[in-house]
Image (tube, rainbow, N blue to C red):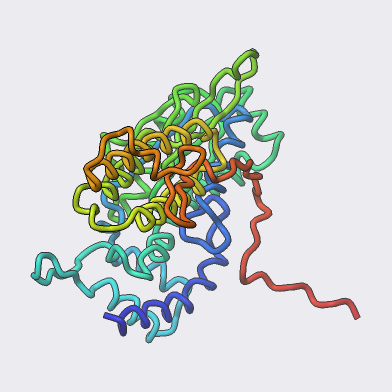
Length: 357
């Protein structure tokens, strides 16, 4: 209900600044001033510096399986106000409606709730802390990392976006396999487990998908230089093609061409804005090609005309248009390099230093 969402938003406003002080830089999902692209650029940054083995992990039904007792213990470690604790516990125990039937919530945080991503981050901070401790005690300096590398011990770093995470490893593959066991032990204390089918170890040259992007090291065309590229994944490309197809099905024939073009422009621009920092120019062109043919097919069905008459629905450049509305597509979004921000990402609750007297 609206009342429940207001209470959740108020509770988030209380909890978020407190736990943001504890959250670690390796966590990027659902945090102020942090984006999916920051996590991707962290991966690219490490891959360019010798972290070529990747443990690509997947948590089974993370939001549904988080142990309430373990989560509440983490909240109690920072919150002592009984009213706040009671609200958090009530939210976890609220239950869900499934096909008109009420079901108690014995584990997990309700998906779609305003508070759920924050609670998941609070729980999964246990994983961040595990790797943070290893990093700062064993690999925190260039000297330590070099010494470990020369002795064959390897180095590694976690990058997490909500319940999606990878561990970048500099060293032999067996280190990544050993880390899988460590991760399983940490997650077990939270009532979670890794998906055996979706968790795998890959080399950066083979590539892997993360947050909708394929990250892979390849030889730059015309040179011997190896470069780490990011581009939309096959799954992401198919998803946007399906959305374009859905908006041009027969049941949309009652709307005007202008309405259809505005809808497609918004959809494609939003999708392209997310992927504009990768090697996406050819992909954008392919998506627009698909959209153009879907619009053409839609017009042929709507007006029952031969293909030779499509020209009257286009502007001078064979771009579909009606009045002031023209098809712009994904290619209208400019490809822009995203700068790796590292530890410079600001906190919205940073305390400004006092002015000098």
